[in-house]
Length: 366
Ligand SMILES: [Zn+2]
Image 1 (cartoon, protein in one colour):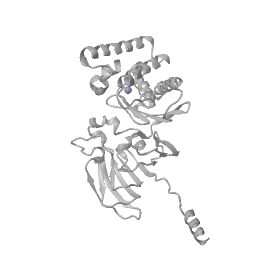
Image 2 (cartoon, protein in one colour):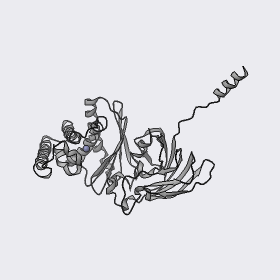
Image 3 (cartoon, helix red, strand yellow):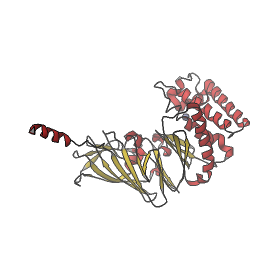
Image 4 (cartoon, protein in one colour):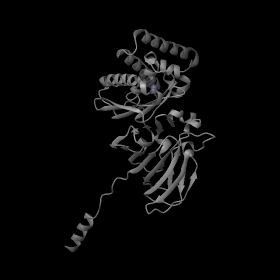
């Protein structure tokens, strides 16, 4: 009996191990530097800021903008580390959990990010605040996939637009490490609005000079998601973030649950076929590309059909007229003719996707 009781008591003492969330706090006090603190659980002794590209100026990519990295164990004892190649830091000993703190200099616009997909895939600041991508701000353990909590500490009047699940006024939770790294966010005094259809919502964040144009963006995004929802009636993703800001060039990037678009020049109804088409196109990729995807290379269908659907959606919702629709269809035809006769002459529509940048006309016009 005594033995039985001992076993029973011992079994009652087994406390379930809590899921090991990584905890990040993102301190923003302006647009020149950001401070980050994190409590991280890790299995080996390597921390990293995933390297998505490098240049002679920044061999460790975004990790080269990190300063004052300090690492301590749970008792507050300092852990030494040495930077190793490719945006990684090797700790002198293993400890978990550990506390890290560091700053990120918001100097990204001083460098060339062609190898990363442009500044719109990294980070920039404007009069409203800070645009960032997860892999440009968050140091993560090398060998641990976990949910992450992010608390934003910001000046009064600032807010955080993120694609993550909101769990507090300025607190969010990711599904896993990839969800943290491969997404974008905006923090500042931008304008934001949630557009809903069915169980799906798009959070639109508009900053800088584009804020007065928010109603036009809303018109396109709202019409697009209503239209696409009618066709698919469901979406794999429940929350999607769209960030819109003015840029030196029109360029955009898509992430797991978010995309950001920089727009150059005047935004008005006359330019709907240009900036409006980009928004409708990127939104359709939520279905054709994210919800529906193939292990086979099917870029011709992903890009060509998406381009067709975005133009069709703009016309169906009265955002462009018949004359503009015909002009756009004419441009599809001339792109296709030009590609199949000159620029991508011996390439099939299917093979064109193997080298997307060389066969843009064939893929998007075909
Ligand atoms: Zn596309």
